[in-house]
Image (tube, rainbow, N blue to C red; front, side, top):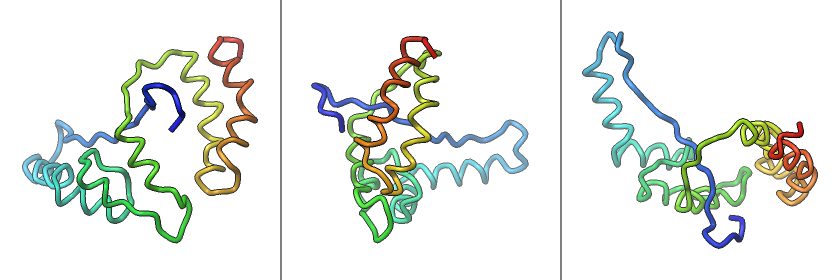
Length: 130
């Protein structure tokens, strides 16, 4: 987590829904209840499929023998999430730095290396200069 005073970070959510035209809305509802409940969240966490919103389940995520070795950073970061209203400039900045983060997630480069290399482009994007 960046060492700012509030240590806030933007989080993303995966949203599951039932389409109006679903052939089996009751079955879909049962599935959604399972996926968002303790059993489903635990299953997702143990498989490290994604970080469940249910914190008791997300705490089950542990680092494995594959990168990223610091997987628990994601569960800790979830405790500091804040919703943000995106702006055109912010979205452009994300298009610059987010693809580069794959190099960090795969342990090919450090976060410092990657973020330092794109800093000027991100700042230009935020300023609307790119």
